[in-house]
Length: 164
Image (cartoon, rainbow, N blue to C red; front, side, top):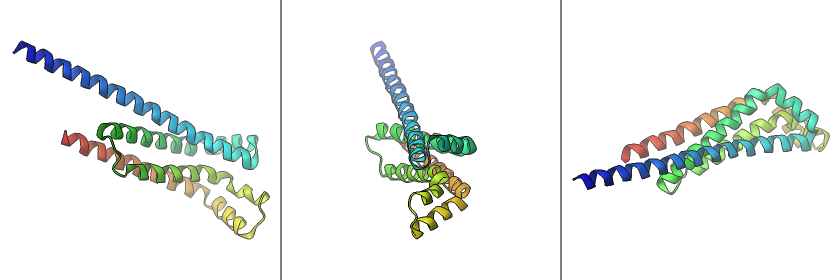
């Protein structure tokens, strides 16, 4: 009976170590995802309107930009966590991808109206005007998609853990 208890304790310790590694790995993926999203934001803004403008826009909308990047990073971390748990995402990659695309679009929206200077085509001008007019609303849509993604993946994790 004593051997069984030691064996049980060993299994619990190994499982705890594996879960700890999974959590750390997931957090690193989330930080990396947030960093990539911020890099895309600054790269596109800089290419379209210059580095000074990119900095000015970030200062003006930092609370949206950081919130979108952090929300996206949380989704990446949760996705990585559950993927490691079940060895397959069951379609959640689509939610992360859609939300990430929406976050990137919302963050880039703050500079899109400057594309008019580069491409004076009527269609692009109309799009740039639309985006400039609804910039803050686009940020809010991006945040809503982030929240939906976090809730969706978090719910999947809770359901999976109940099955264990």
